Image (cartoon, rainbow over all chains, first blue to last red; front, side, top):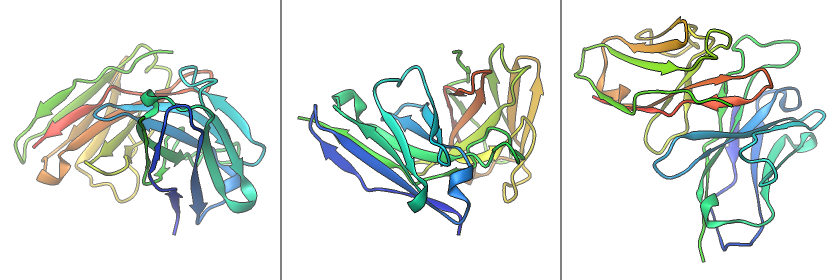
Length: 125
Length: 106
């Protein structure tokens, strides 16, 4: 089955670090871009960045540049989103999502074809 | 970057047609995509490249484009279509942009 499974909910204090994960199965993880999307309570979707696991080429949203780090380990089909120092304003649901688009095939264009179930991150003192 | 503007909410009766717009000057040059998000669930792609429907998405969902506005149409709205709907596009730098979202109440 083609799916993205994210790590579980996290409760952290301001200033702490955090790395959440997104494990892919059922497709060739390394050769499709995978991105991260933030959704704050009661708010809309915000694109944070996207990474190509095969060579770790990354594009960051200007809104999140320097705030988070995207990485991927193609040997275990897993993408990561990392914070070095969390803030209360980082409290949100975070989704990973893949676009089945690369230099060889791009039938659905730059759509996020497949989404993880989301990871809720709560930052509170 | 730019903003994709959607109406915040709309209310439709079962069986009626809902039309959700998404506007930005970049849309004549970039494809648009639509997602449906039900409470407590992740978004699901329902329209890609302005007008195409992924397999498994009901035919009552359709997309269209005219100039700087794209439209998601839900024909014969059903109770299960109550959800938030987001448009999405991109820009020449490879960035992704989501619309402001529309809450559809049936």
